[in-house]
Image 1: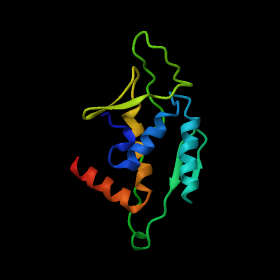
Image 2: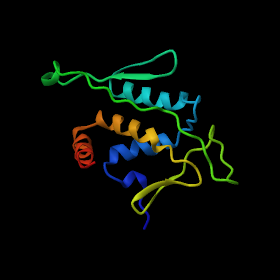
Image 3: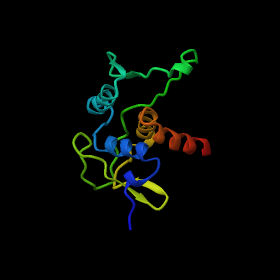
Image 4: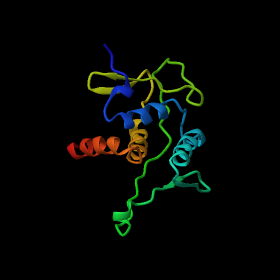
Length: 144
C-alpha cells in the first residue's frame, strides 16, 4: 500500500507542499505560486502585499499575550530548479510535479522535487493554521 503525501504528518505541511507541487514555478515564473500564497493570506484575514519584484509579504498579527515580543520572520523562495531526467518530456511551465512517498522519502517522478524551499513555504503557511496543526508542527521541528 502506497502512502500519499497528503497522508504524511503533519498533514497541514504536506497538504500545502502537495498543492505547491501542482503549481509550475521555475525561476522567473513565480506568479501562480505567489497567487496561491496571497490567496491563503486573504482567506485567513492576514494583511498581505506583493512588492515590485514579486516578493509576497504576509503580516500575521501577534496574539494578545505576545504583542511586545520581537518580530519573527519566516522566509523561503517560491521558485524551483527545473531539471528533468534525461529523455523525460516535461514542461516546467505547464506540468505539475508528480511527487510520491517511497519508504521514508518524498520523491518526484523523473524531475526535481521542488522541496528545497517549497517545504519552507509549506511549513510557514502551516504555522498560521488551526492550533492542532501548529502543535504537531512544533513537535516535528523540535525533533530535528
